[in-house]
Length: 117
Image (cartoon, rainbow, N blue to C red):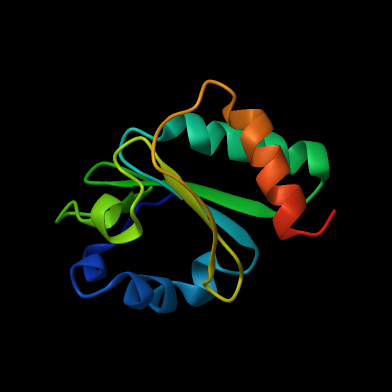
């Protein structure tokens, strides 16, 4: 997957969501901090189990989405190990501020809530 610049994060988190609306927000999207790879993996697993479209990205200087100014975690309140689930309208539907050993189960529950399942 090609990396995309998230440098617009320096302006505002909503600006980030709107900038990538067409590319990222066609479905529920998980954005994880620089050390949030476990959330990305868990999101893909939960989406496959539930049979729902979901895109998952790690946002960092070397991530799937490039945050060259490294401000994503602060703007979204995730910390380096956390993540957010965004609805297609850009609303933050769920947030984790740290890693969780039960990430797959946590995300399964969050997705079921977001999708009213």
